[in-house]
Length: 400
Image (tube, rainbow, N blue to C red; front, side):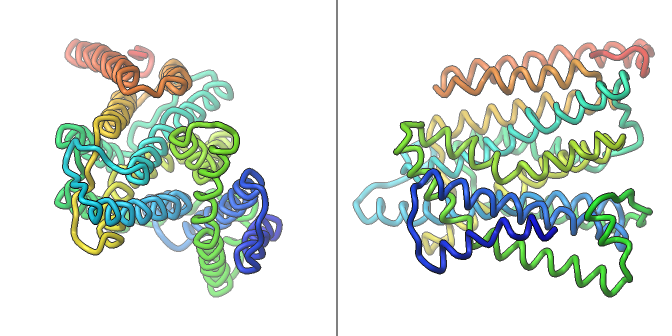
């Protein structure tokens, strides 16, 4: 814990001493600080399962583990609000489907990239690691019922955002409310004895007072590190892209989420390695629910706060397609989850499609991948429905 806490110290020194270095080096230093902070709060959230229900603890773990993602997204949304004010003052008017500023495009790039990263890289890693260890399908029957229902609703709303070509304020409020309902339902479940190991076990074994003080201290310290590092991290990424000739959109959509969400994916992988793949997948699904509801809703709130008035978040064609592709990826993931027995082929499909679509950034190319995701999901769904109606649905007869 001390080693990961120390990763944030260089960020403090650079920011408060107003030091200047190469943007690539700064992005690396601030990224390390964010990763270190995310690990600390993840361990704290795991240890908190001793005091609260496992379902609620996993929901909180997923929320806290992507705090770095929220920090980065908040910075992007705030900058987008400022750019909106400047553009409006210059006589430009923004509406659904219209041209938007570069800063506004970054917001959609980050939130859509983060969601696809969780499914394409995170889910597939958990599924494939479990199969490699056990040589059997991952059985999730009797678990994740609440998470799957919430994910279905959030996915449908994401499709709606594409057709509206904006994230409406009413939609944003509804998404935030949906996540609060999810948290409330999770909190009503009974607490269970968690399976802790490593730093989280060391915290969980302490007396109640010491344990809670340690968890609270980890949360506070990590939150401060992440808040201090988030804004300069985004600025360093953009400057690094200019210096290295890397497309800014790629940096914001993939590099930033990879840095901010890597601890969460690693935690899920660790769950799988210690034969608790269901907990690992549940954490990632809860995080997906979190990001499709609270993260999308809050970006509208920060954007409006920065602009000084209540505003819908307008999307141009490219941004709308990014949300459509994200909804399609989520829909395919849902289809795999509904069967409740997930074969290695499902994990491989998610991983291969995720890697395959990365080089194609044009909107028309992204639409082709959207159709591929939807087609595979439709075929899988029809096969699942056929087996269900014929009474042949079982663990041994896996539609994968």
